[in-house]
Each structure stands twice: as C-alpha cells, then as structure tokens.
Length: 372
Image (cartoon, rainbow, N blue to C red):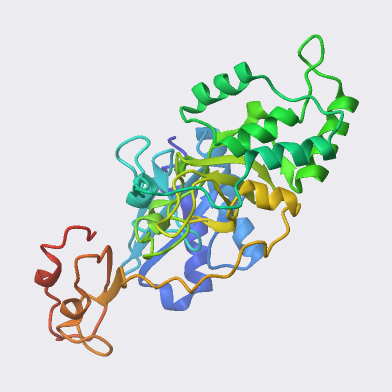
C-alpha cells in the first residue's frame, strides 16, 4: 500500500498528462488505472508507459483499480487524490474520476425500482384460450414416448418457489420432464439431450426442466445506482404487463436462446392471469406480452401473432422531469411547478445554467408522495 500511495509512483503519469495536455497545466486532471487497463487522456503508447508504475503498485497492494484526481496550481504545485474502489463502490461507464461514482453504505441496498412490488389486480382471470386439458392432450400427441413428472414433484416445486404453479404449466410438465433422471440420479446424456430436443420441438421454445423453474425477481437484472435511481417505472392504465424490474409472479420456464419466457401471475390491469411474457436480456424494466395463454402459444409452437391486436395502451402521465439548478436558457423559474403532479417520481436536477440566473426553488415538489 505504501507504493500505491507514494507520490513518486504517480509522478511519471502526472508529468505525461501535463505534457500531453497544455491546457491542463493548471486545474484538475482525472482518470482511473486498473491492473490490466487504464482510462487516461493519452494515446496508447503514452498511456501504457504512464500507467505501468501504478499498475505494479496495484498488483503489490492487491488492489484491482483506483481512480484519481490531481489538482495543479499555477506555480506547478500538485495535490494528488487517490481513491480505491471496492465492493461498495460503483463507477459509471466512461471516464472515471472521484465523485462520479456511487458509494453504497448499506450492503445489498438497491435503488427504488428494484424494490418495487407488483400491484394487485383484483379480478384478473385466465384468457379464454387457456385450456390445460387441451394443452396436455396436444403435447401427449406430439410426445407419445415422453415421461412426465409426478404430482409429488410438482408439489415440491411449488414449495420451493413459494407459489402455486398455474394449471397450464402443470399440464406441460405432466407430459415431459425434459431431462429424465437416470438410475443414479445423474441421467443419461444422450437420452437427456434427445428428450430436450423433442420437448423443445413440441413446445416451440427452449424449455427448462421442472427443477430449473425459478421466479424472475429483480436480482436477475443488474441495476447500478447511477442509472437505476433515476429510472422511473410505471404501468399505464390498461397495460397487459406491469412495468417492473422483476416479479415473484414471473415464473421463468424457457428461453429463445437469450431472452426469458415466463408465465405471469401478476398481470397488468389489461392482462390475463397466466399470460406468457418475454423478458428481454438487454432491458432492465418490464417485459413484453408474448401470448395470452401457454395453450395458445404451444398450439402455435410459440409463433407470434396468435392474439388479436387490442387498442393501443394509453401512456401514463410523465413521471420524470429534468431541470437545471440555475434557471436560464431552456428552463424558467416555474419549471418544477409545471412538472409537479402526484405521480411524479423522478426529478433530475443538473448543474450549470447562466451565471446570475434565478435559483431553482424546490417548493413545488416538496409535498409529492412519490418523488425522489
């Protein structure tokens, strides 16, 4: 640790930064250095040479990465600030510098959208196309030699998940267990693979075995504070799927090779109990309605377009607002007043504005129940 915090270790880097950036001879210079990479305003050759002494010190200290800020006075005197990262520190993408990341003070804490629970939807019912008996009969015709799970295994899965499986999902696994276990519990690889391929062909998607079912909760989606805290989640009136990061009612049972299929037991106000949703691997909020029932999708081998197009879902009231700290230019002194309403959830206040402008008052949003 002594070498990492010795000014001599950093002096070659700071010298190269000053030489490469005449405008930075005074003021602040920032960046980051990791064991195998760096983020510096230098070309590759100069950056590698500048970072090398710091990287050796990182290895000796057992530290993965540090961010730094150097403040240089007009007379050349320089003060260096070195900040170590760790499990509680999140750094945003792009140029990294002290003060731009997030320090998580409570282990395991997550931003508000990741704590959001589904809203109850009284009266939600299954779609008319949901028919467990038809589903089971169809699958038995497609998989005449398949071996299904037992009622005891279904009950054990429900206990593990803490939720009752919908009848359509039970019907599916009563026909095929996807991976039949061998006598010693390890299974036969060729038989397992053949059963998996047959089940996927019969259903129309990559199907998980019963023991691999899981509820798709918020922990399955990454949410760094710098982004997640300013993300608003909303479910429009009449929406089929709730705008959530994850839900204890999303029972994941298959995939298309990248995205996850789930049976939805917590539908939106315009959805159906047991509808099938597609959870995109590149998205952090919400899911796409893929079909109104598992029966309808299996009968069509998960082809899209099996449900009739309904009216467009109404947009919710704007739940985010962005203003500058000192008004001037694009924002007037009543910027927050015009944005304030009971459903307002996120207000982003940026620095800047015009010198001598009118300071932005927060009174219009002070009593709102959801704002952060």
